[in-house]
Figure 1 (tube, helix red, strand yellow):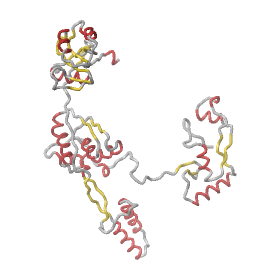
Figure 2: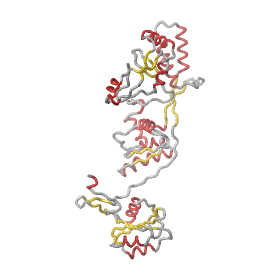
Figure 3: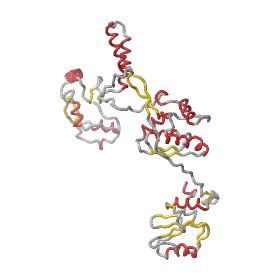
Figure 4: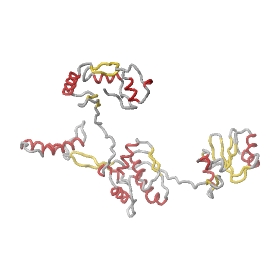
Length: 399
């Protein structure tokens, strides 16, 4: 008897399994009253085991079944579901017609090595010392190919020499990459990506190696690949190593090997195109004082830096051309006030609102009564304190 493993179940329904087994020998359904055994396998109390579960049982004597199985095995081609020689059940797996299943071991011949990666960087930035452990483009190509599709976004948070972004761009992916050191960005990352855009990066996966017949008049058959012909050449070579082959056979095989012989050719995978933007991280406006358990403003939190930070945190779009307000979100305007916000300042700002507009005022100081006054105006206006109501953090929250 064969049962699924603990915590498992058959991958097919009973009707399908019965049909598959009947391709080898006659089977029938029979209740074996094996609830106790099934409960033990599943690790459940006997009271929870289902009753009336029928098993697939041979409908002929075992010896007759063995003869039928062997006869079916000799007849071929075999059914999809197999009875192996030791009695276990298996399923035929077909070799994919395109691509291959990723393996856990990738050789230098397949994906390159550090020396190849250093050579790629030297070619892009002559006279500079390459990174200690650069990654070859062929390695990143395989990883990106397995993990994404064209149009997907590839994120590399340690740009370095820009290999990941460069390969992602050449493979039709969108990408975001980050680099902490500005010197690295200006010397390596940005120039490399600019060359990719301009089609001036001939290395890495820009060029690929393909196979073509050595004899120009020979063509690869439609249902075959250049790799098939290369394998055929290898096979013929092994046959020729056998002793005792007639002279005529050796001559015919040698001629066939010449006709099937392949050679490497380079093809262009990338010709340039696309674009990218460089964005710089704004100075931090907020800090945290653990002694006071309080969020504070940094020295950089002033002027346009503070305006942009507040707008980003409150999800407002900047309006640099507006005379009075710094941002907008729908019908809500934003203004950032460095210093004291009192009723007089509120009245001055409210006077510049258009009909149907509301106002969010972010201020570093807010007088008592200002919030209540804004609510009384009935226009959806509000005041928020910078930074305590913009960027909230507490050690108690972290715990």
